[in-house]
Length: 274
Image 1 (cartoon, rainbow, N blue to C red):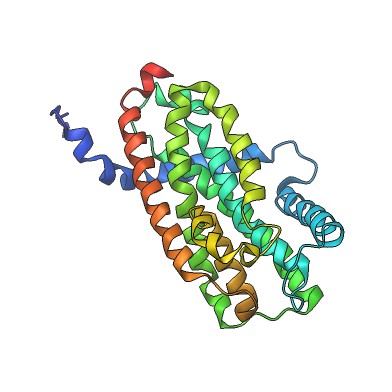
Image 2 (image 1 turned 90 degrees about the vertical axis):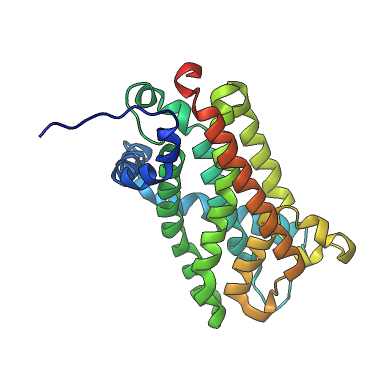
């Protein structure tokens, strides 16, 4: 039986989100391809997902913990404070950094076949999640080393991982579309991420920020996410600043809305721009 091809104005837009689900196998294929390419011809392979955050934790611990003498709760080992902030930040920065160049990197695929282009940046998210899961081994090892036993809050950690991905998704999708239109913007992303690493509470608890500035500080949505990670791991030793957390969540939703809207608007011209 032959199939009929129906051409109807606006039909592609109405079918876009159902098509995103229909093409889920393509998403998995692209993610697996990125995983294999990332560690191809490397000496230690996926172990880099452990080495990089571990070395960063060592640097932060030496510079901020022993030299700068950053004030933390004395009952909490500083290395645990750092790794519990570094892991969500690395998740966020990896999604944003990888997704921002994903559409341009797949220009040949975009110009040849139809599929919802949103699949491309989403595929990078799956790759980063795999790296993040491996990186959790560092956290587990340090908790065993220092004898840190988590409370019931640790059960909520997957929820904060999902929130970290949601927080990264909006800027990542927005950047993926903007880089197609303005190629020089891809050089801005690494600078923004480097700056964000030091203004986010990775090497220090957010409680060191003066009370009158804490709400403003939480306009950076990663502040609440990092606080949430530490709360899941350390419990009452690292409480969440709930007004700031709710504000950060609202900022996250705005970024997701802005990112999807910008991507869908520029997506129609991807083939011409690329």
